[in-house]
Length: 218
Image 1 (cartoon, rainbow, N blue to C red):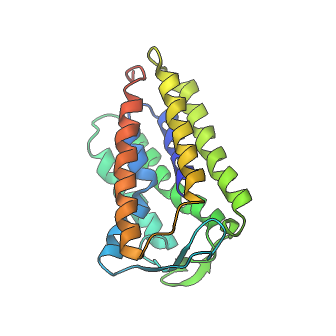
Image 2 (tube, rainbow, N blue to C red; image 1 turned 135 degrees about the horizontal axis):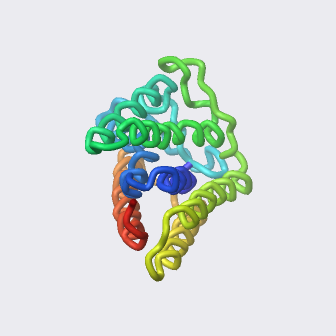
């Protein structure tokens, strides 16, 4: 899952407005940020196999540190703690919301991945496999994104024109998700990791700009 992860980011902002949207955009992709770094270092591994599933060419056969259940819980606590350390008020709430945003990545991946997410070390792998059916997984991702954006629109007051920019952004993200189904597969694993890191950084920056169109947090 890619674009669908940003739905919980929008929803988390609606739940706790003091956390910047760009931070939550990083939070929901934190597991994949760490995964990309570990792929570049040769620690976690994947194969690029065009047609591996309808929705993804990635055979993610070794990623116990970032997408294993224990690793996901640890990464959630670590990132939640880092972000909470920058707040003097409501640190407990910030930790809980940010850590939940990070862990939402594992839960959403569980729905679409083939069984490649280990419960313990590199064993007991789980995944419901909706990537086998792009006609199900792609609308599901877009629905997750738009649900979060709707919550954000209704619970984070906008400046003049703010909702227009929000829905332009959400529409562009949805278009990216559809485009990805027809784009050529990355040439090799490290190229995939670099592309992922660049995408996460760019989308976090755009989220910061969208967040500036909303009213200040109380």
